[in-house]
Length: 256
Figure (cartoon, one colour):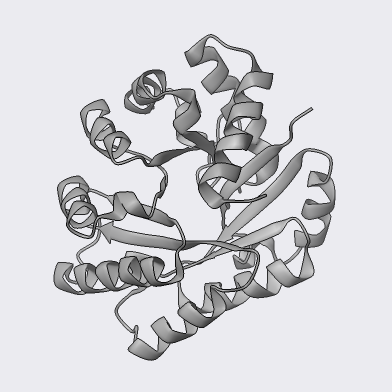
């Protein structure tokens, strides 16, 4: 039977420091691969360490829009060099976040574009973080011809109409705990609309635990709740959801 792939996790987070080892042990027969995603320069370094220690942990290197203020060209060179490692499968998470006032939009644009160019140089797909910034995200992705790179729109939170635009560019959609929320109606509609072969599973752990664990620390062990929700929305079996999303994850991340 196919095992679940968690395409987006943050196991370098300090909330896992007490029991990371035990948690990974508990995942062995349930989760095939976890992709730990960089969000700052430090978390990129921590991702490399996790990847070296655990065979089923893969990595993505990139800097989240909220963390780009201190970046330097030397940081980009470091990411470029490290991204040649065998288990680095993407550049991310990168993008735009207008939920907070900082960093300034110009600073976010600059480093989003820099990291898109870097992804092109190293021939890796991208993981996009976009919050309250749909139109600017789309226009930058179009301007930089990001459809040639491919990748995942992580933690998708926009409308069905916007989903069509990302879909037309060939992107996959990261679906996680929010699809189980009673107030997650918009995402449920998007999941109903999306072809199953464009959906990948993700936790964004330790954040966004699905029901019935909403508000608690999230982990890949919660993904069956997300599978259940997608299966119910699509009117298909849980096995089909797991099999297809597993293949999608391997396709987008080019995992043999």
